Image 1 (cartoon, rainbow, N blue to C red):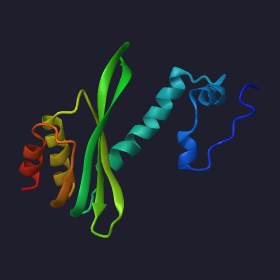
Image 2: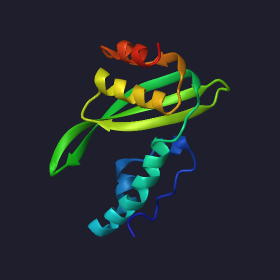
Image 3: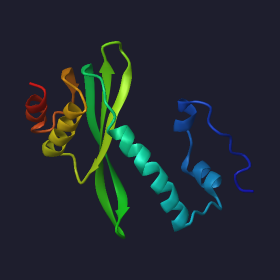
Length: 146
C-alpha cells in the first residue's frame, strides 16, 4: 500500500507539516460516489445551519473579522470565493467561532449583512472589532453596533 509510512498527526503543529505528497499517499485509492457525497451533505447541512443560527453571547470584548479567499469549482467552473469568519472573545476570555459565511467576495456590504445577522442572534455590543481595514468596514460595524 502506498501510504504505509504515513503516521496520523498528533497535534496542530504536526498537521501543518503534512505535505501534499503525504496527503496523496493517505488518499490513494479513495473514491467517493456522487450519491455518497449527496448523502453526507444532506446530513451535514442541517447541522451546520443550526450551528450557524444558534444564539450567541450578548457582549464580546473582541471580535476578529476576516476572510480567506479560495478557488472552488462551481457549476463546472473554477471561481474565487471568500470565506468570512467571525471569532469572538467573550468577557471571560473564551473564544467562540461566531460563524463562517461564503460569499462571492469580501465587501463591506457582505460584512454588514453578517454583522446584522450577529445582532439578530443576540450580540448587543462589541468593545473592539479587529478587521483588515476594508473600505466601508467601519461604517458597517457602527451601523450595527453604534
